[in-house]
Length: 164
Image (tube, rainbow, N blue to C red; front, top):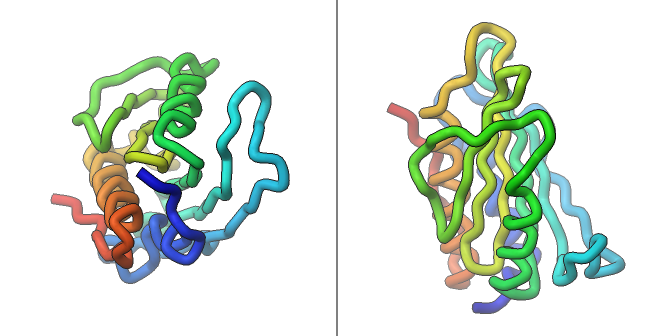
């Protein structure tokens, strides 16, 4: 499995047309290119893409971070380094991608970490009114995982975030 080229990697993060009705881009996708492929003990970073999404009425939102790695082993190393976050506890969500794990923060936000081949992704969902929706987080994670697979296949990512 090869790393995703930047032009397709930028599209792994869903855009406005890929979001459910009422959602918007709080902060458009930004590209970060790594000068040094190593971050501490983990090597293989190529670039990452980050965006902020805003839910209907502005009372909820999501942060989507995607990292393109040199190999599936490098993506797995990043994933494994994230398995014991401070102030978060593991929670149960449907598995997504090759590997995934979900967490709830002490403040109530939800987060999922996942890998698909050479891609590592982290999606965090929070709400200022009530609890964030596990269904929204799962829908975003499924779309990001599918988009990552499409990009790795050399296809333009077009999977949409669909919620029930």
